[in-house]
View 1: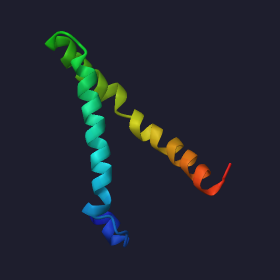
View 2 (view 1 turned 180 degrees about the horizontal axis):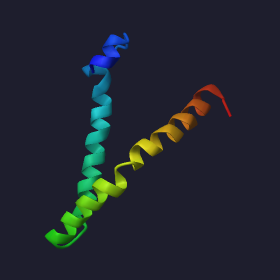
View 3 (view 1 turned 60 degrees about the horizontal axis):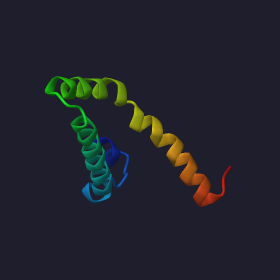
Amino acid sequence: MAAPRRLDYPWDAELLAPYAELMIEVARRDLDFMATHGSEAEKAETAVASAVIFRPVPPALHRPAQEEESARRYGIE
């Protein structure tokens, strides 16, 4: 949080709260998916695999989502 402040960006708790809420939903979905596996060993394996394999997916989806929303809002193709 210090870097945005140094650059004079108003990124404070109020601005970040909606992002935190979205990440809570991501965590819920992660745990819901893990719960679909029967044994504790399968759940643990899923948790580890998700942390390694799935970790880059949300940031990878973020940019195309921004591009799509920008095009929708501003008519950019």
